[in-house]
Image (tube, rainbow, N blue to C red):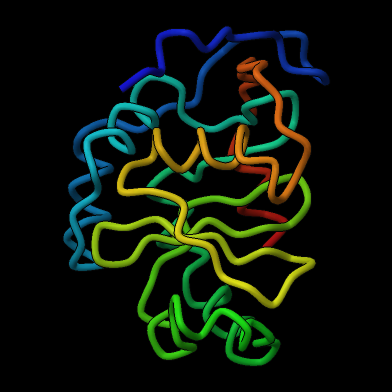
Length: 169
């Protein structure tokens, strides 16, 4: 895990660096509810940084509560607006619907977790990408591969209160 090089910066609106993190109980409750086991990177990330945007407004990883509370709406939307047939060799629609959404990007790409693997459902492409076996690999792929956005090395983390995310869904 290489999350130590992330720099916490003040929130754009509040100018505060208060973190909104998950604790072990939150993670365990989510795992039990969804019958999954998160990788250690995800657990470390949400306990150390929590809710916020990494990479100068690019990657957003959800807290366990957000994952659970938004999963049904997300699956309904994916069912209704499925268009990733070009990526069916990577994941089928049925497999995607068994996954959980653990985050997204500023561009609307969605980060999903299935069978201990991370995948990306791009907003502007019908392809599905396997991004990594851990959250660290996935974040690195998103920020450095140059596939969905121009590669960048900056790893600033801007915390935000996740209640706004829950109210907007």
